Length: 392
Image (tube, rainbow, N blue to C red):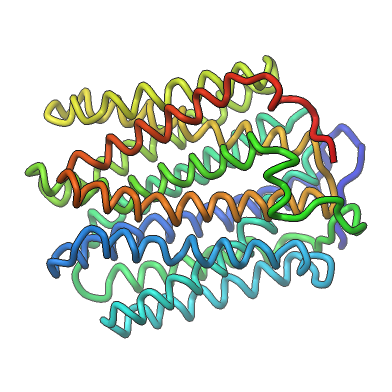
């Protein structure tokens, strides 16, 4: 059965089942990502490794995402989408097994880089497929629901880590089991090729000139996501928190991301997306400035992280909605590939800058860096000229 987008403004059973399979696969993969990023950081921290090197390892996967995202739109013109996804899941299982069986930091860098390549396939193909089969009038709510389930999966990873601990092979075996589960929903999905296979009128890099606000949104969200995921537990340990409490900071933050994406998507469907994006950007700035000052009061800390992380993540949700309105077919796949590249650049730079800033001002360089990045995006989001349809 072949799945293609049409102008039909209603749901069909095929669309609904395929959407459920895609979201199920990527959500389980999200648990795996959020399990291994803090796991490896905490293992290296226990070894006495510098936060700069810890941040460097976190950069390896985004580097792979950057490289892989250039190739995925081309791959979708040559290969069928479901086959790409199943191949990516199988390769990720092999990588986790390799990660479990070596303690070499150099090998970890190579494995994490290859994991980023796999991630670019899973994310770009899945997100392009989801947007194409979703009726346009429901883009906001579907993108919100998708990002809610994905963010929930990111919350479950750190929570699972607080149960498995960081010692031994158990967390690695759990990751392998999760990837097996991630592949199962794809067996019920149809085959997929983009609705239009014409050569796109822009490339992955030139997308930044076509839709600069969307490119910057991906960069900023990824910068914050990877900097906090990889370094916030280290920040917590250095101010005297227990390992469990430090990882729980990630859980409450990611739980906010899971809870707030559907309301943000609903708001973007019913109100001006520009106003929704500006509100998310402002909340990102305020939250980044506040959470370090409430870190000693658990209730205030958990609440602040819940709201800040959730609304900040809404920037990406609104960006996906705008991409779905502006592009289709291979151009949409190219736009999603560009999302992957600029997300990868942000995720690559975030841990590096965050780790170096913590070495320079231990540990308060991390929250200061997040304030600067969030503030920059808020200022740029105020310019209305970035919200027009792209001129290609």
